[in-house]
Image (cartoon, rainbow, N blue to C red; front, side):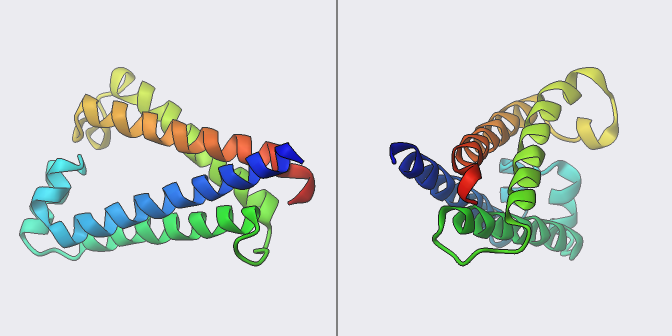
Length: 150
């Protein structure tokens, strides 16, 4: 019984973290170029935002939308929302994406000079990757503990 409550709480936390990340992405759009710079989106995104290009807004709100869906899936797994389609498969995919992004972001800045990687600072890659690893780890433990009842 105790494992059930831990997994329930972890999936609530996992979903809440995705919702928080989505809210921060919306905040970046509202905050404008300075926020793009502060949160490490890269100078190219900040410059496009300064020129009132729709591209940074569409990209950032697209990411926020995905994060909202991910939060809904985690909360569905926790039982806070009705069961969503392909719940187990999707929670596994979300967990994998968070963990791979976290691991990749810790490695990529040190092994490539690709402009998409180099446009962001090493500090951005490190802290954002640690965040993704934490999010992914919480998803992983929550999903594993609740697997039999998902």
